[in-house]
Image (cartoon, rainbow, N blue to C red):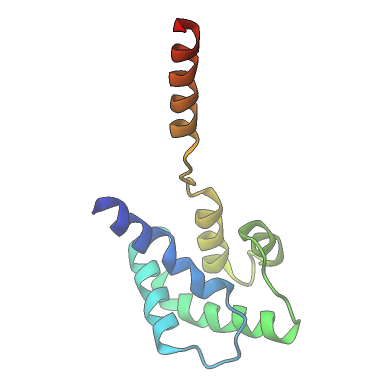
Length: 118
C-alpha cells in the first residue's frame, strides 16, 4: 500500500507539467499540480507556482514543443523565468526509478547454483 501511495504522490503528479494542451488548465491537472506543490512545499513556492505553470504551458503551446523526457524539459525550462517549474523538473529527473533488475539477477544466481549440481 505504501508503494502505491508513493507512486501517486511522487510520480503521477508530474504529468501535468508535460502536457501541451491549450489553456485554460483543466481542473484535474490543476488539482494534481497543487498536490505536487504541497508535497514538495519546502522547496517550491506555492504562491507563484500556478502562474508559472500557466506561463510554462503557454511557452509549450506557442513554440510547438512536445516534451519527450524530463531531461528535455529541464533543458528547455529557463530557471530565471520558471524557478519553481525548474525545481519540480529537477526533482522529477532525480527520482529513483524502480525496475526488476534485482529479481532477474537473483533468478540467474539461482540458475547458476542449480547448473553445477547436475
